[in-house]
View (tube, rainbow, N blue to C red):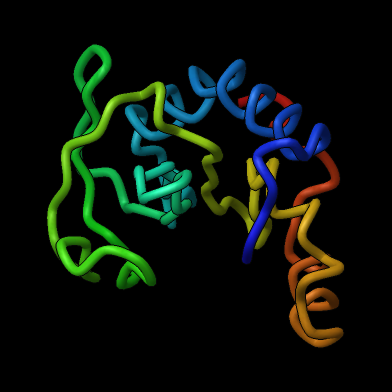
Length: 137
Protein backbone atom coordinates (compact mmCIF):
# COMPACT_ATOMS: atom_id res chain seq x y z
CA UNK A 1 0.00 0.00 0.00
CA UNK A 2 1.52 3.32 -1.00
CA UNK A 3 2.43 5.69 1.80
CA UNK A 4 4.00 9.12 1.38
CA UNK A 5 7.34 9.65 3.09
CA UNK A 6 5.92 12.94 4.36
CA UNK A 7 3.13 11.12 6.24
CA UNK A 8 3.70 12.33 9.82
CA UNK A 9 1.55 9.63 11.44
CA UNK A 10 3.36 6.86 9.54
CA UNK A 11 6.76 8.32 10.39
CA UNK A 12 5.75 8.48 14.07
CA UNK A 13 4.59 4.83 13.97
CA UNK A 14 7.89 3.75 12.39
CA UNK A 15 9.83 5.67 15.06
CA UNK A 16 7.72 4.00 17.77
CA UNK A 17 8.40 0.56 16.27
CA UNK A 18 12.14 1.34 16.20
CA UNK A 19 12.07 2.56 19.84
CA UNK A 20 10.42 -0.71 20.89
CA UNK A 21 12.43 -3.06 18.67
CA UNK A 22 14.24 -4.35 21.78
CA UNK A 23 10.89 -5.76 22.98
CA UNK A 24 10.55 -7.76 19.77
CA UNK A 25 14.08 -9.15 20.03
CA UNK A 26 13.53 -10.09 23.67
CA UNK A 27 10.44 -12.11 22.73
CA UNK A 28 12.09 -13.55 19.60
CA UNK A 29 15.21 -14.63 21.49
CA UNK A 30 13.26 -16.23 24.36
CA UNK A 31 11.38 -18.66 22.04
CA UNK A 32 8.75 -19.09 24.73
CA UNK A 33 5.87 -21.48 24.11
CA UNK A 34 2.79 -19.83 22.61
CA UNK A 35 4.68 -17.10 20.77
CA UNK A 36 4.85 -17.39 16.97
CA UNK A 37 4.74 -15.64 13.59
CA UNK A 38 7.74 -13.41 14.24
CA UNK A 39 8.25 -10.86 11.47
CA UNK A 40 9.84 -7.50 10.77
CA UNK A 41 8.89 -5.02 8.06
CA UNK A 42 11.94 -3.80 6.20
CA UNK A 43 12.29 -0.71 4.01
CA UNK A 44 14.10 -1.86 0.87
CA UNK A 45 15.45 0.89 -1.39
CA UNK A 46 13.77 1.38 -4.76
CA UNK A 47 14.14 4.23 -7.25
CA UNK A 48 12.52 7.28 -5.71
CA UNK A 49 12.01 5.81 -2.23
CA UNK A 50 11.55 2.48 -0.52
CA UNK A 51 9.30 -0.57 -0.54
CA UNK A 52 8.22 -2.05 2.78
CA UNK A 53 8.29 -5.85 2.85
CA UNK A 54 7.85 -8.33 5.69
CA UNK A 55 10.55 -10.87 6.47
CA UNK A 56 10.58 -13.76 8.92
CA UNK A 57 13.78 -13.28 10.88
CA UNK A 58 16.00 -16.30 11.37
CA UNK A 59 18.84 -14.58 13.25
CA UNK A 60 20.11 -11.19 14.36
CA UNK A 61 23.46 -10.00 15.58
CA UNK A 62 24.29 -6.40 16.31
CA UNK A 63 22.82 -4.29 13.52
CA UNK A 64 22.37 -7.20 11.07
CA UNK A 65 19.16 -9.16 10.65
CA UNK A 66 18.88 -12.33 8.58
CA UNK A 67 15.44 -13.33 7.40
CA UNK A 68 13.26 -14.82 4.70
CA UNK A 69 11.04 -12.65 2.50
CA UNK A 70 7.33 -13.43 2.83
CA UNK A 71 6.33 -11.93 -0.56
CA UNK A 72 7.69 -10.90 -3.94
CA UNK A 73 8.75 -7.31 -4.44
CA UNK A 74 6.46 -5.24 -6.64
CA UNK A 75 9.43 -3.15 -7.80
CA UNK A 76 12.62 -5.23 -7.65
CA UNK A 77 13.23 -8.48 -9.53
CA UNK A 78 16.02 -9.37 -7.09
CA UNK A 79 13.65 -9.65 -4.10
CA UNK A 80 11.50 -12.78 -4.21
CA UNK A 81 9.39 -14.66 -1.70
CA UNK A 82 11.40 -17.31 0.12
CA UNK A 83 14.83 -15.82 -0.43
CA UNK A 84 17.14 -15.10 2.49
CA UNK A 85 18.14 -11.48 2.97
CA UNK A 86 20.56 -9.66 5.27
CA UNK A 87 19.45 -6.19 6.31
CA UNK A 88 20.29 -3.56 8.90
CA UNK A 89 18.17 -2.96 11.98
CA UNK A 90 17.90 0.67 10.89
CA UNK A 91 15.78 -0.56 7.94
CA UNK A 92 13.05 -1.89 10.26
CA UNK A 93 9.78 -0.01 9.78
CA UNK A 94 7.67 -2.33 11.94
CA UNK A 95 7.61 -5.66 13.70
CA UNK A 96 5.07 -8.16 14.96
CA UNK A 97 4.44 -11.54 16.52
CA UNK A 98 1.45 -13.53 17.75
CA UNK A 99 0.71 -14.65 21.28
CA UNK A 100 -2.50 -16.09 22.73
CA UNK A 101 -4.47 -15.40 19.56
CA UNK A 102 -3.43 -11.75 19.33
CA UNK A 103 -1.01 -9.87 17.08
CA UNK A 104 1.40 -7.53 18.85
CA UNK A 105 3.51 -4.80 17.31
CA UNK A 106 2.10 -3.81 13.91
CA UNK A 107 2.65 -0.13 14.62
CA UNK A 108 2.15 0.85 10.97
CA UNK A 109 -0.65 -1.63 10.25
CA UNK A 110 -3.13 0.26 12.41
CA UNK A 111 -2.70 3.28 10.13
CA UNK A 112 -3.69 1.35 7.02
CA UNK A 113 -7.28 0.37 7.85
CA UNK A 114 -8.57 2.94 5.35
CA UNK A 115 -6.57 1.25 2.58
CA UNK A 116 -7.95 -2.22 3.38
CA UNK A 117 -11.22 -3.76 2.26
CA UNK A 118 -13.88 -3.67 4.98
CA UNK A 119 -13.42 -7.41 5.57
CA UNK A 120 -9.63 -7.08 5.83
CA UNK A 121 -9.92 -4.17 8.24
CA UNK A 122 -12.51 -5.96 10.38
CA UNK A 123 -10.42 -9.12 10.59
CA UNK A 124 -7.23 -7.21 11.37
CA UNK A 125 -8.93 -5.22 14.13
CA UNK A 126 -10.26 -8.47 15.63
CA UNK A 127 -6.79 -10.03 15.99
CA UNK A 128 -4.68 -7.02 16.99
CA UNK A 129 -3.79 -6.66 20.64
CA UNK A 130 -5.28 -3.60 22.40
CA UNK A 131 -1.82 -1.99 22.48
CA UNK A 132 1.18 -2.30 20.17
CA UNK A 133 3.52 -3.54 22.94
CA UNK A 134 2.22 -6.55 24.84
CA UNK A 135 2.04 -5.79 28.58
CA UNK A 136 4.31 -7.91 30.73
CA UNK A 137 6.57 -9.35 28.06
